[in-house]
Length: 330
Ligand code: UT7
Image (cartoon, rainbow, N blue to C red; front, side, top):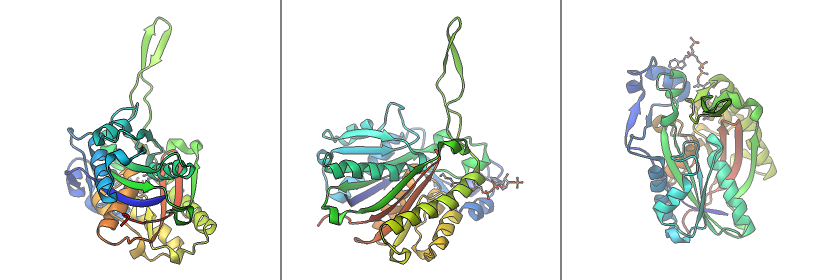
């Protein structure tokens, strides 16, 4: 599988830390020093996830030089769909990609990496030739805007990567690992509420609905700084790649302190750690492709370069991959 195009989309509205501090008891100083976040984009009430994801997808198609009809598979990694039955088909419809099968994949902040690895498996079997892997989230829908422990962290965004079949020797997915630990699910949840409805005397059903995002920040922080370097180290060892051969660390953007801790563990200079937390905050499944797209378009990431990537978050789930960016085919 080769990575041959990317694109992204973010809502126009940007909310600064200062603005948030007018709503909840927080400060620019606290948010910046603890997380590196300076602002986040927030989708308006008229901006569904489908629209953001479709804009990102079109940009990736244009970048790769593909027509919508070229696509065989669209994977949408999201935890905040417009429709619990699936939002990927809506994106497929909006693109007019009528030859593609489209479905959602939910693995919170690991979702994009899990979806990219999933697409690679379909490509490896020959079932799929061209795929768009989209990471898109609109967690602003599910935040308690009065809970300063969570509402300052997240933002909305979408980004997509175009991947296609290539000779095995030229693959852009050099190695990967994926992990889940459901015994620690309670650290970070966007969970069904326990509302009930009486159907008949003696028969009650659950009433659909979700509680706002809850996070035990310290537990998730400890999990991230322990597990991410461990898994990334396994991928580097398995592929025989010394850390100094990695061009960029492309990690899930949750906290600048986590990015720095992982970089220090591998002695990667901080200027080779990609970060856009200052402008977007944590956009969940979108962070990795959003960062990739920014760094490809501003010329930091060049064709042929190696990217050590890791996604981590609710589930708990985490994954790591060593990627090579190819860029659009001549
Ligand atoms: O994307 C999924 C993966 N997510 C992550 O990786 C997130 C991992 N966790 C973190 O990044 C950090 O734990 C946070 C940024 C969420 C929190 O940072 P922290 O340094 O762990 O802070 P804390 O939770 O220990 O809170 C320290 C203090 C508390 O006050 P007391 O109890 O010491 O008086 C909090 O009440 O900071 C307080 N606090 C705030 N103060 C101002 C918590 N949130 C805020 C806030 N503004 N927004």
